[in-house]
Length: 103
Image 1 (cartoon, rainbow, N blue to C red):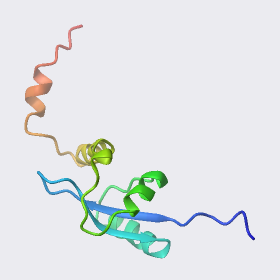
Image 2: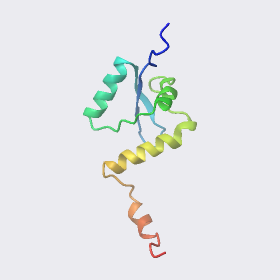
Image 3: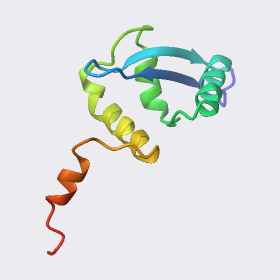
Image 4: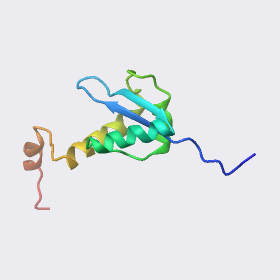
């Protein structure tokens, strides 16, 4: 038995349509996971490498919403993806203007 055998690579794609929770749109292992990652990268979609998160998301069915336990981490990733894409919430400037920078 080969103890050095690598764990399968998993990838899960999510889609977020407000106000609903993000849903699983693709999920795959090994070769399919590589195809999902390649398609995401080619489309300019954020690819986040986190085997533990991928493992949890891979347990969900296609079309299933993420569970509440994952809301925070997924919200942080969505916010980060928006930020690096140059998109900001409408209230961003108003919030920024209300912060006292003269501390």
